[in-house]
Structures are given as C-alpha cells and as structure tokens.
Image 1: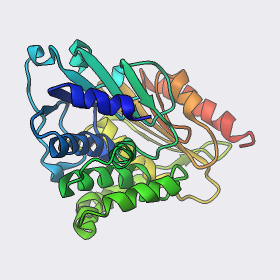
Image 2 (image 1 turned 60 degrees about the vertical axis):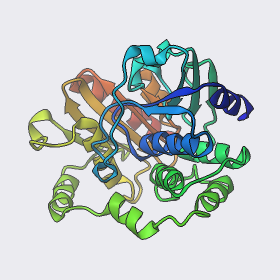
Image 3 (image 1 turned 180 degrees about the horizontal axis):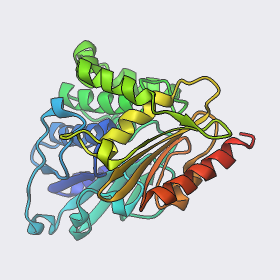
Image 4 (image 1 turned 45 degrees about the vertical axis):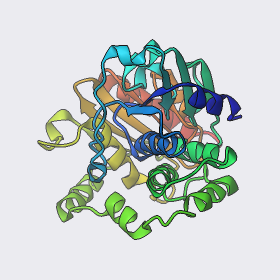
Length: 312
C-alpha cells in the first residue's frame, strides 16, 4: 500500500505538506508528524508545511511556512486528512509536479496523482505512523508525539469504534519513543474555568427532535467576541451531546460568515450520506458540512430525525 508513497518521498528533494483548513489535532498531527518523519530519514530534503493557523491548538505554536508559487515547480505536494478538494488549506498543491494523499475519510473523489485512502484507519496520523512502521523508517520523539496526538484526538482518546487492534499496535510503535503523556494530555484537554462554565451554559441550549436527535444552534449574535470561529466552536460543542442516554444522533449548528457550520455525529447510524447531500463529507459516524442558512440547516436536521427514526 505504501510503496508508491515511499518512492515519491525518496524521489523529490522538495516536499510541501498540506492538510484541511481549520485544522484539528489529526490534521496538525499528521502534517507536523510527517514533516519531522521526512527530516529524520532524509535530512537533505527541503520540507515545508503550509496552511491556516491552528487556532484550536495554541500550545503547538506551529508556524506555517510562507512560500512562493515557484517552490512548487519540480516539487512533491502531500495532502493529509482531507476528503474533498474544497477543504484543502492551500490550493497551490495542484502546481506541484506530483501529488500524494494520505486520507482516512470515506472516499468521495480523486484528488492527487497517488491517492492512498483507507477509511478503516482511525486517523490520518495513524495512517502516517503505520506507513513509518511498515516502511521501517526512523522515528524521532517529535514525530512520534505529533502523530500520537493526532491518533488520540481523532479516536476520541481511543473510545470511538474506528479504534482497532491496528490502532493500538500503531500507538505502541509510537510509544517506543518517550512521549510525555501527562504533558500532552494536559495541553490537549485542560481548559480555563471560564470555558468550562461556557460549556455548561451551552448544555442548557440542547434541544431534541421527535426521534431524539440532540442539537445545539448558535446564532452569530451568540458567538463570544474573540472566539476561534465557527468550526472550532462547532467541534467543541458537538461533544457535549455525545453521552446523553438514548441519543444516537446529535448535531451542532454554528452560524458564520460562510453560512451555518454543521457537525454531525452518531454512535449507531451512518450520517455521512446526509453530510454529503448538503455538500460535506467525513466519516460514517462523524461528518460535517456548511450550509447557506438556518432554513437549510433545519432541513438537514429533519433528515437526521428521519434517519434516527429508522433502524441502524
């Protein structure tokens, strides 16, 4: 599976790594982890990471590289953790001489010259780590820490059903390096008390459809000044509904300048086709999309309600 990827990485002297916009732990973990992995094994190569700021992960202090268009000439562009072209953080990847993708979303479209797409991986970071393991590449502490972070966050701390025996096998490979788990977990999950109170306030906003789909709708006026934006808010709030008894589908809606950002989740049903119907995508039980207005968001909610009324 990984022979083509290794061949391309060995061939090109300049490699530019992309991922999806509004990066989460997996997008950043796979991007930074692959960068370090390539540097560890091929120190003579130029490796750049591009994209928007990781507002959800300020502790990383990860500075993206600002590079001119001409850097893509004769280069390899790698796209990580991205199932759709419109979500790629920098469209200049297409200027590269050759393109390569590692992705674990449900396949939606061809994006790169070499598309390695396997939805059975719990994370793109896990896929990159497995690539390193299978290809017997050297692994540094920095690379291992970034990749482990991506695995932990996208698997819900190894709680989601995307977690497999391979997940733990790969995690064990990464833990051959002395990753400081206490420090990493603190950085990822410790919150200011004010944020905890804010989450508690938002729990009072949870509503339910006739078939017990839980949802939160946040208007633009309700978004606190200085917040990290709709995608970060949506991904943060959707988790508040995960453990409600007898709720098997839940969704968070957050208004933004681009429309209404929607995060869809389920622990029983495949909600991906509904996300795709509204221009999004993702995984069978965790998907997202952005719709133009509240009216469309409520139609999406009706579709989820119909799904929840059926049998898994």
